[in-house]
Image (cartoon, rainbow, N blue to C red; front, side, top):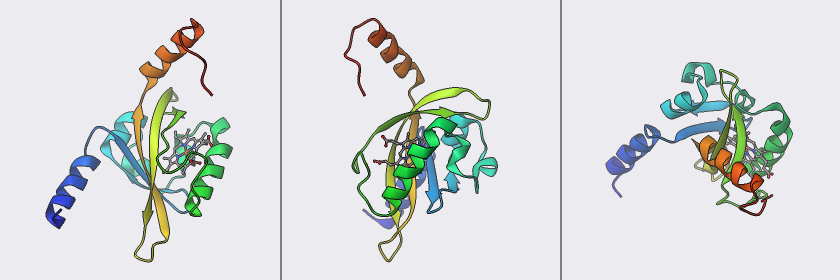
Amino acid sequence: MSEALAARLGAALLGGPDAVIYADREGLIRFWNAAATRLFGFTAEEALGRSLDLIIPERQRARHWAGYHAVMAGGPGRHGPAAVLNVPAVTKAGATLSIQFTVTPVTGDDGRIEGLAALLRDITPLWAELKRLRAAGATPAAG
Ligand code: HEM
């Protein structure tokens, strides 16, 4: 792929429907796209420089940071590199969403992980339907 195409493709994906969040080694938000603003209600100005705790419900934080730092240290993570995680998130308005996300390490020229990029999407209706089906006994409970 040419560099020009790679740049156009990157810009298109960052401007697309999936929320893209990039956080540095400390877990501070360094990139926040328009879809992240639509999803969580915080503008880029409000989110940049803040901890990811901005959108992580308090009871999820310890597990998140344990996983975050393990992957940042170069480990495979509990779920492996292709993991798709489903978690609750909180918005600026205080609403709880069900989100699904994947995480990709971003490495510097020296091969060291500099930060983690996440692609996130809202699965609130899907998750609610799954819970309804489970409660009705239609599918085996997972997890
Ligand atoms: C609403 C937002 C988020 C919530 C509620 C959340 C919550 C969690 C939870 C509960 C875990 C533990 C999963 C487990 O061990 O089974 C986890 C792991 C992790 N999270 Fe987050 N997280 C959020 C956003 C993010 C973002 C934006 C990133 C990266 C920029 C990230 C990076 C990670 C990583 C790398 C792991 C470890 C995955 C693994 O062990 O395979 N998380 N998170």
